[in-house]
Length: 131
Image 1 (cartoon, rainbow, N blue to C red):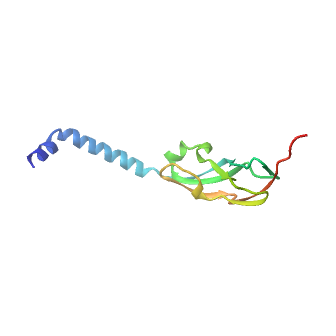
Image 2 (image 1 turned 90 degrees about the horizontal axis):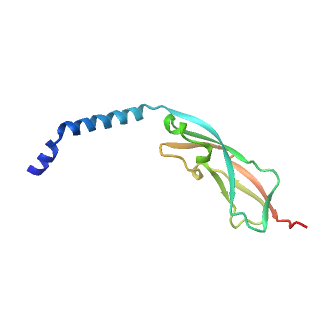
Image 3 (image 1 turned 135 degrees about the horizontal axis):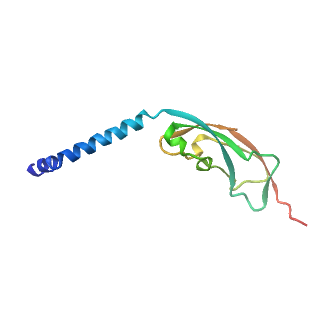
C-alpha cells in the first residue's frame, strides 16, 4: 500500500500537467464540428473472369457522402474511399450490383451517409478474341 502511495505522489506536478494537457486535447477534439462532404470516388472492378468482359455503359465514378469531424474529413481524399465491385464467379448476362455504405472503409470517427447510384447494372459478355 505504501508503494502505491509513493508511486502516486511521486512527480505529482508532472502527472497533473499531463492530465490537464490530455483534457485540453480531448475537449478540443470534442469541440470540432461534424460536417458532410461529397466525394467523387472511382469505381473499381475486381476479379473479372478471364473469359468475360464488361460491356455497355457503366459509371466510372460514384458519389459518396461522408459525415464526420471536419479535421478528419479535410485529410480524406477520394482515393481513401475506394469503391470496389467483386465480380468473382460472375456469369455472362446482366448483373445488378448494390453499392452500400457498409462496403466502403472510412477513417475512425466518420461514416458513409449515402452512395449514389446505389445500384449499377452490368452486362457481362464473352470476351471477343482479336482477329
